[in-house]
Image (cartoon, rainbow, N blue to C red; front, side):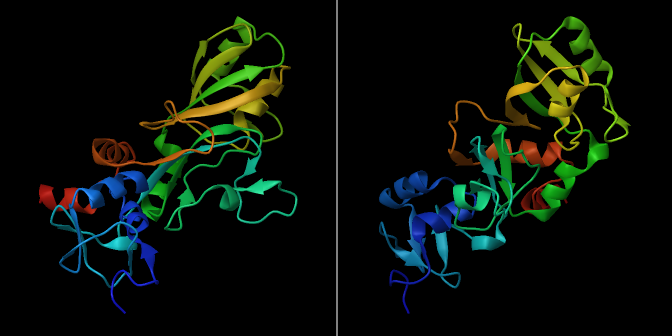
Length: 251
């Protein structure tokens, strides 16, 4: 069966799965005549299989063998699980990408914001390594006015009796009477909600806006973008890893 027949993945999906760009940007590359399939100029809407040779600007792509990182804005109400009969909507239902990706650091159902999705297991392990102290930044709104004394308790570390642990010191900035910015370097289960309860308060809204160097920016709930270029290299560097091609260059 030849490339372009009704099998395999759409070409723009295939290119996006290789971490080159988004599907929309892939369409632009195809329209600009910069994409070839098996040595033939590609056309919009064609399909390819893993056995096809796809090149962009002369560079051969390697399909799912390429590591992909996607920034996704998880909306409130989406549960980070494959299947949960109690969940109104699961991440698998809400998030779609040509290659199966997994999140590096979950968000609970009632929280929103940045999820870093990838098929690179080593990157996930590196990002989730608690001793590494990787930063995660949040904007929090609470039910009652948060006092300066409570924010100072957060900075120094709060005892969470239910987990029998004291949280690590962290950075906190007041944004208003009921809102603050907090940067954590650990990932305890529902940590910020537990911290607020420990000082007699309650979280009304919790949004994660950054993981390491990846920022949510102006993204809206449900939106996603492929992470690439210098931003991707900076992520691997921050996680203590380097992409394979960068390692070869340094030899």
